[in-house]
Image 1: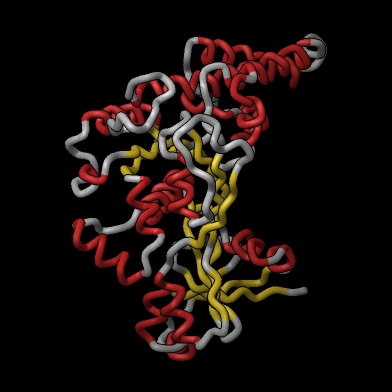
Image 2: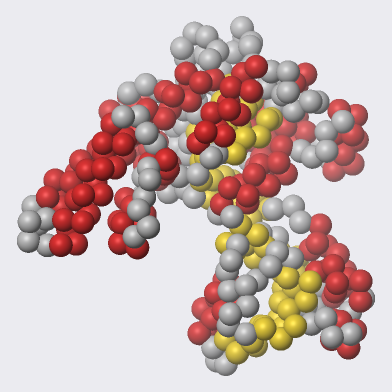
Length: 366
C-alpha cells in the first residue's frame, strides 16, 4: 500500500512524514522545501505477530508495510506548472490513497502561503488543482475517443461517460462523488482514467499539542474538516505532527509513558494506519511457522486462492485447499496440533472468504 502525503506548503507534511517514517526528510519554514518526493517504508504494528512467533519459535517476523510518499507542497496554479506542480501531480497519480495534511493551528512563527489560517480554503485550493489536472486528462481522452465514436459502440459509450463526468467536474464535483452507473464497462473506463480526485482521502488535521488530549474536540477548524470529510466519504484523524516527531525519537517505554501522561490511547501512526485500512477496505491474514511469522495485507472479501496468490502466484494457480484457524483460537489452544485435535482448524476450498486474523496454511500443486 502506497500513501501520498500532500497539502499546501508549511502545513506540516514533512514533519508528519519524518514522524511516521523516522526518515529524516528535510523540514523548514519556507515553501518548496521538499522537491523530490521522499519515500519511507513503515511496518504496520501488529501485536499478533510476536505472539504467534513465540508460539512457533519463528526465526523471523515480517510485518505488513505501508509506503509513505512525501509530495512537495502544492500551490495555486500547480496544474499549470506553478511551483513545479506538474511533477508533483504525477507523483500523486502513483499512490493508492492520499493523506491531505490540513493546518488547524495558529502560529505567527510559521508562514502560511495565503497569509491566514483557513482549512476549508486550503482544502479547496488543493482540490481545485487536482480537478484542473483531471479535466485535462478527460479533455485529451474525449478528443481521442470522439474520432471513433460514430462507428464504434464501445467508443460511443465511453464518450457519453466522459462528457457526463466532465460536466460533473466542471461544476466543482470531485470524481469520487460522480454517480457511476451500475455498468461494468463504465466502471472499467472510469478506473482506467486514474483520476486524482477519485482517490480515497484521509485528512490529517494538524493541531497544537494542547488539542490532542481531547482529539481536537474544542478546535472549530477540526470540526470544519470533519464535516467536509463526512460529505465526501473521507476519513479524518487529528494529529500534532511536531509532537509525533518528538515521540519518534523516544524509546518504546518512554513513548508509552508519554502517551499515558497525555491520556492518549494511541500514537498518530497507529491512528493513521487504522484509518488507511478502513478507507481502503484492507485487512491482514497471517502465516506462521518455524522459519517465519508474517502478515499479508489483502482487500476484505478476498477468497482463499487469491490470498494464496499474495504469497506466490504458484499458490493461486495450484490451490487445493486452505487450512484455516483463527489467531486467538490458535493461541488459546497452545499449538497447531492441539487446535487440529479440537477440530477448530477448518479445511476451506476456493469459495472461502478470508477473515482478518486468519492463520492459514495453504495446500497446493506445483
